[in-house]
Image (cartoon, rainbow over all chains, first blue to last red; front, side):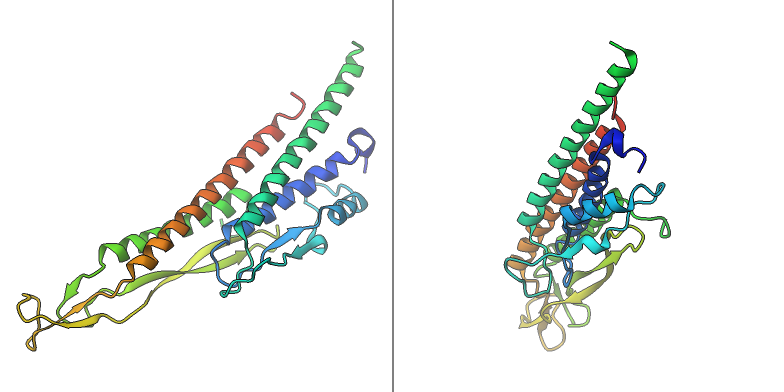
Length: 119
Length: 136
């Protein structure tokens, strides 16, 4: 991965965060679909997977190996395993982490730009 | 549209449409609660949407569609009311059996789910805008 040295882990982290946002949005969208099984991305293993495969053009890395079914705290009768409070918390946490990664990237870009300008 | 990979906006947007269909059926059910007709066939029956998850293999996302709207719930209740202008020759009328409590609970859940999807869409939008501003 060529930009590994420039952005470090943050490029891969942003991709995992973006994909996790989609998975959590799918869970929230299916909050009242009978039989729907909620999923979540295991951030640690997904990050390792993205770092390992590297940047392969535009296509997002397939993270299905790191996507696991969520174990409900209290199973519901209709077979749906979406628990809105869990999903909302995970979504909020993921959004904050995404923004944190963006800040890291922005800091890095500002740093390199300053160095290039020789200020 | 069907072949293009799903985006997070389509996931939340379609879920909102599905919840809106559910809200409409609830409104119809409540509006027709206790409506009286002169035969069991013409009496109003509770309508319910059937939600079905739509998976997108390309992105791993899943959204929800309304597969169809079905009639469900109790049969209309027969009531003897000969003075009613709608009564049949035996003096019976049929009243739509809509469980109003259940409909109201359904309406609340629908509204909450809709709000959640709006929130998801707003968050995704602001994060994507922030990503576009990267380096500025």
